[in-house]
Image 1 (spheres, helix red, strand yellow):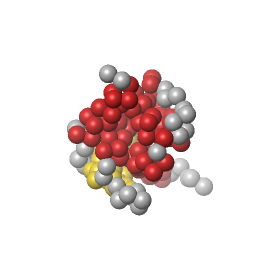
Image 2: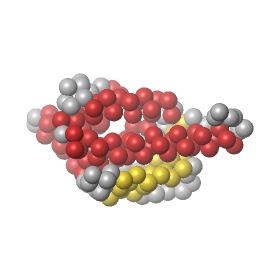
Image 3: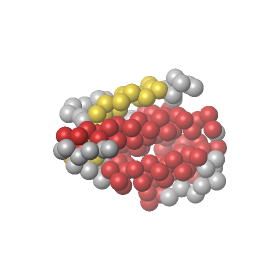
Length: 155
């Protein structure tokens, strides 16, 4: 099987059976993001325990790329420190902005390497980044909420 076919199969598997789909309780923050260029939507909930991501759940409507990418993202960040999840986000962002010229780091991105071909299609990059952007936003809000509860000033 060619690598491109394998990548397509990984994306389809995550699309058909998305991991951590369905919004669950408890959660710290819920966000809703929309890709206006195509209409894809994701509602995402994040729960943190200190600086560790304990849960990420989502309800998504849209193309296979946006839904599969969100599924992969949940696998890559749950159970990890927020800093590690953000570093993974940065690696995925670098891959998506590389227009197909960035060699994906399989150790960091795992199934996320399947989206390397998507980077060659700028119109689809927003689809692949939708869930990741929602996660980054929700996690930042959850951390700010935690800081505010503990009396830490963000000023």
